[in-house]
Length: 104
Image 1 (cartoon, rainbow, N blue to C red):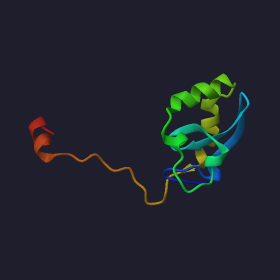
Image 2: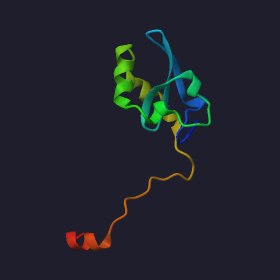
Image 3: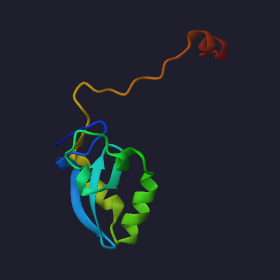
């Protein structure tokens, strides 16, 4: 199982090393989907700008132009993604005054 790293890319998030027209890149997965990063970013204890600074749609276009089926790859590796234990998505806070005015 992949231990979720909030900002960086860990070695167990790596799916495959790919050749993007002569540029060595790493295809990785997290809870938001597939993304591409450089080998230097893997295993470091710093944020990976490729994980959060680039649109996932851009990665999808690149991967599909290289002949990868992004939907199938994501489904085949989805079981590897695991959120940190104890991590929960915070619920949206409801303002009771506004809710009472809406009738809810």
